[in-house]
Image (cartoon, rainbow, N blue to C red; front, side):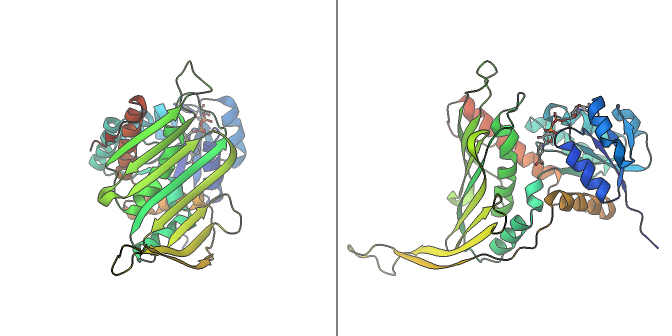
Length: 337
Ligand SMILES: NC(=O)c1ccc[n+]([C@@H]2O[C@H](COP(=O)([O-])OP(=O)(O)OC[C@H]3O[C@@H](n4cnc5c(N)ncnc54)[C@H](O)[C@@H]3O)[C@@H](O)[C@H]2O)c1
């Protein structure tokens, strides 16, 4: 007997939401699409899903078990509360919310109602991030000392959020996942160039401090000539570079390190070790499809997915600390829990 998969609705079929529509239709679980915009509704019509302009119509549909919210960030919280109250499991695009209080209230609401709450931290489902996580957990890189995350491009320039809120959720979610920790403090400096009247930072250099002195440097920008999606992980045994813009060598592992001599004398420095560079074969799959499969699995098993609401809250806490630091010209701000 074929197992019936839970029906899913997408709310917000704009620039990014249409990818949710495509992927969920491909998985055969798309039941409904909702958007206030007629053009967005029209573009989803060929999927054969029911098309609505109001969330209430989606929520009244008993075939819909899960709702993906891919609207603009300020609307996430209200729509997610409504979906949870209607008994739906919810996948909310990043950032989960724009304040720690809102994010926490959403997590508590979902827990209280026994609903799945997941956040669209897409890159946690990237096969290379999964491989890196397995390598780190197995001790292959040794102790991870610091990470450098760079997410740069020319555009998309947002009007309602700065580059930190728009792009850094990915890097903060990856850093915390790989380090298996939550940030302690953030300092961030930004530059406002394109929309001075709105005070929106186009580029942000963030330094995120974790326990045991570990660091993540997060450089995000939509005002850069290059498309860069690069993560460097420096461990005390090996180092790894994830270059998502590369087509065939997304992951490189460097057998490089620095070893202090057993006894440090006046003339002795540290010994630099340069070994092989290995390009592990990572079987690729579309991260969005893997994210959807994790959502479907959470709906069926009732087990929290890796990108659950609480991990979304931790990212919002770090984003908020970063925003405070930006306003304070880069002063280090403790992450409030
Ligand atoms: N995971 C990723 O890699 C990734 C990438 C890009 C964007 N995003 C996130 O996806 C979300 C959407 O971004 P976007 O670029 O697609 O924005 P967008 O403005 O292009 O699309 C948003 C859509 O939501 C619709 N909408 C807004 N409020 C609504 C409501 N109450 N009911 C029904 N429809 C409503 C709008 O009409 C619009 O079509 C944001 O949270 C963004 O951060 C995630």
